[in-house]
Amino acid sequence: MKIIHKVAVLGAGTMGARIAAHFANAGVPSYLLDIVPAGAQGLARNQIAAAGLEAARKSKPAAFMEAPLARLVTVGNFEDDLKRLADVDWIIEAVVENLEIKRGLLRKVEAIRKPGTIVTTNTSGLPVGKIAEGFCDDFRRVWFGTHFF
Image (cartoon, rainbow, N blue to C red; front, top):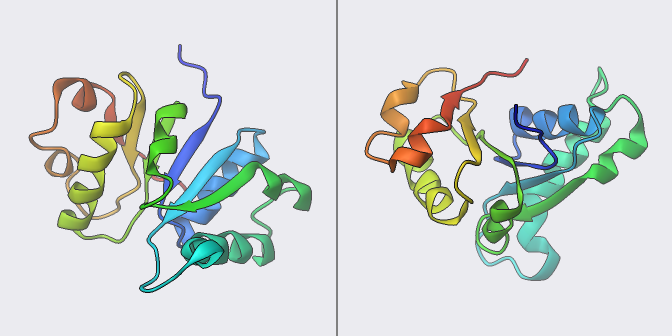
Protein backbone atom coordinates (compact mmCIF):
# COMPACT_ATOMS: atom_id res chain seq x y z
CA MET A 1 0.00 0.00 0.00
CA LYS A 2 1.26 3.47 -0.86
CA ILE A 3 0.20 6.41 1.28
CA ILE A 4 -0.38 9.62 -0.66
CA HIS A 5 0.89 12.65 1.25
CA LYS A 6 1.07 15.15 -1.62
CA VAL A 7 0.06 15.23 -5.28
CA ALA A 8 0.81 17.35 -8.31
CA VAL A 9 -1.82 18.07 -10.93
CA LEU A 10 -0.44 19.12 -14.29
CA GLY A 11 -3.02 21.24 -16.06
CA ALA A 12 -5.29 23.75 -14.33
CA GLY A 13 -8.28 23.62 -16.62
CA THR A 14 -11.73 22.50 -15.52
CA MET A 15 -10.63 18.93 -14.82
CA GLY A 16 -7.22 19.64 -13.31
CA ALA A 17 -8.39 22.35 -10.91
CA ARG A 18 -11.26 20.19 -9.69
CA ILE A 19 -8.96 17.19 -9.24
CA ALA A 20 -6.79 19.38 -6.99
CA ALA A 21 -9.94 20.41 -5.10
CA HIS A 22 -10.92 16.76 -4.76
CA PHE A 23 -7.61 16.01 -3.03
CA ALA A 24 -7.94 19.10 -0.83
CA ASN A 25 -11.34 17.79 0.27
CA ALA A 26 -9.55 14.64 1.42
CA GLY A 27 -6.94 16.70 3.28
CA VAL A 28 -4.16 16.03 0.76
CA PRO A 29 -2.09 19.05 -0.34
CA SER A 30 -1.36 19.50 -4.02
CA TYR A 31 0.53 21.55 -6.54
CA LEU A 32 -1.60 22.80 -9.42
CA LEU A 33 0.68 23.66 -12.34
CA ASP A 34 0.10 24.99 -15.85
CA ILE A 35 1.90 26.84 -18.64
CA VAL A 36 3.41 30.32 -18.35
CA PRO A 37 1.57 32.93 -20.43
CA ALA A 38 3.76 34.56 -23.08
CA GLY A 39 5.74 37.46 -21.62
CA ALA A 40 4.43 36.98 -18.08
CA GLN A 41 6.64 38.13 -15.21
CA GLY A 42 6.54 37.57 -11.45
CA LEU A 43 3.32 36.17 -10.01
CA ALA A 44 1.66 36.56 -13.42
CA ARG A 45 3.71 33.50 -14.48
CA ASN A 46 1.24 31.47 -12.39
CA GLN A 47 -1.89 33.22 -13.65
CA ILE A 48 -3.31 30.25 -15.57
CA ALA A 49 -3.05 27.95 -12.55
CA ALA A 50 -4.36 30.73 -10.29
CA ALA A 51 -7.34 31.26 -12.60
CA GLY A 52 -8.06 27.52 -12.53
CA LEU A 53 -8.01 27.52 -8.72
CA GLU A 54 -10.24 30.60 -8.60
CA ALA A 55 -12.73 28.95 -10.97
CA ALA A 56 -12.81 25.89 -8.71
CA ARG A 57 -13.41 28.16 -5.70
CA LYS A 58 -16.38 29.80 -7.43
CA SER A 59 -17.86 26.72 -9.11
CA LYS A 60 -21.42 25.59 -8.53
CA PRO A 61 -21.81 22.95 -7.38
CA ALA A 62 -18.89 23.71 -5.10
CA ALA A 63 -15.59 21.99 -5.88
CA PHE A 64 -14.39 22.51 -2.30
CA MET A 65 -16.48 21.03 0.51
CA GLU A 66 -15.39 23.98 2.66
CA ALA A 67 -13.87 27.17 1.23
CA PRO A 68 -10.77 27.15 3.50
CA LEU A 69 -9.66 23.82 1.98
CA ALA A 70 -8.48 25.76 -1.09
CA ARG A 71 -5.39 26.68 0.97
CA LEU A 72 -4.16 23.11 0.40
CA VAL A 73 -3.69 23.88 -3.32
CA THR A 74 -0.45 25.65 -4.29
CA VAL A 75 -0.39 27.13 -7.78
CA GLY A 76 2.66 27.25 -10.02
CA ASN A 77 3.86 26.72 -13.55
CA PHE A 78 5.70 24.17 -15.66
CA GLU A 79 8.82 26.32 -16.10
CA ASP A 80 9.53 27.40 -12.53
CA ASP A 81 7.91 24.69 -10.43
CA LEU A 82 8.27 21.34 -12.18
CA LYS A 83 11.15 20.55 -9.78
CA ARG A 84 8.52 20.27 -7.02
CA LEU A 85 7.43 16.97 -8.56
CA ALA A 86 10.34 15.32 -6.75
CA ASP A 87 8.39 15.90 -3.49
CA VAL A 88 5.08 14.28 -4.41
CA ASP A 89 3.69 10.76 -4.26
CA TRP A 90 1.32 11.01 -7.22
CA ILE A 91 1.52 13.09 -10.40
CA ILE A 92 -1.69 13.47 -12.39
CA GLU A 93 -1.43 14.77 -15.95
CA ALA A 94 -4.56 16.64 -17.07
CA VAL A 95 -3.39 18.83 -19.96
CA VAL A 96 -5.04 19.33 -23.34
CA GLU A 97 -5.91 16.16 -25.32
CA ASN A 98 -2.86 16.31 -27.59
CA LEU A 99 -0.53 13.31 -27.68
CA GLU A 100 2.66 15.28 -28.38
CA ILE A 101 1.96 17.88 -25.69
CA LYS A 102 1.30 15.13 -23.13
CA ARG A 103 4.39 13.14 -24.12
CA GLY A 104 6.61 16.24 -24.09
CA LEU A 105 5.50 17.21 -20.60
CA LEU A 106 5.75 13.65 -19.31
CA ARG A 107 9.34 13.36 -20.62
CA LYS A 108 10.18 16.24 -18.26
CA VAL A 109 8.25 14.52 -15.47
CA GLU A 110 10.17 11.28 -16.08
CA ALA A 111 13.47 13.11 -15.49
CA ILE A 112 12.36 14.87 -12.28
CA ARG A 113 10.13 12.48 -10.35
CA LYS A 114 11.55 10.18 -7.72
CA PRO A 115 11.52 6.46 -8.61
CA GLY A 116 8.24 4.77 -7.74
CA THR A 117 6.17 7.96 -7.84
CA ILE A 118 2.77 7.16 -9.34
CA VAL A 119 2.11 8.96 -12.62
CA THR A 120 -1.31 8.91 -14.25
CA THR A 121 -3.10 10.57 -17.10
CA ASN A 122 -6.63 11.87 -16.95
CA THR A 123 -7.05 11.48 -20.70
CA SER A 124 -10.45 10.56 -22.03
CA GLY A 125 -9.62 9.90 -25.64
CA LEU A 126 -5.97 9.00 -26.16
CA PRO A 127 -4.57 5.48 -25.75
CA VAL A 128 -2.88 5.37 -22.32
CA GLY A 129 -0.20 2.95 -23.54
CA LYS A 130 0.66 5.20 -26.48
CA ILE A 131 1.27 8.21 -24.22
CA ALA A 132 4.02 6.44 -22.23
CA GLU A 133 5.44 4.42 -25.12
CA GLY A 134 9.24 4.34 -24.92
CA PHE A 135 9.48 5.69 -21.37
CA CYS A 136 11.74 3.98 -18.80
CA ASP A 137 10.62 0.75 -17.11
CA ASP A 138 10.16 2.36 -13.68
CA PHE A 139 7.92 5.03 -15.19
CA ARG A 140 5.82 2.47 -17.06
CA ARG A 141 5.42 0.29 -13.92
CA VAL A 142 3.67 3.12 -12.07
CA TRP A 143 1.85 4.58 -15.13
CA PHE A 144 -1.87 4.18 -15.71
CA GLY A 145 -5.00 6.05 -16.67
CA THR A 146 -7.41 7.62 -14.21
CA HIS A 147 -10.53 9.52 -14.94
CA PHE A 148 -12.07 11.71 -12.30
CA PHE A 149 -15.69 12.80 -12.36
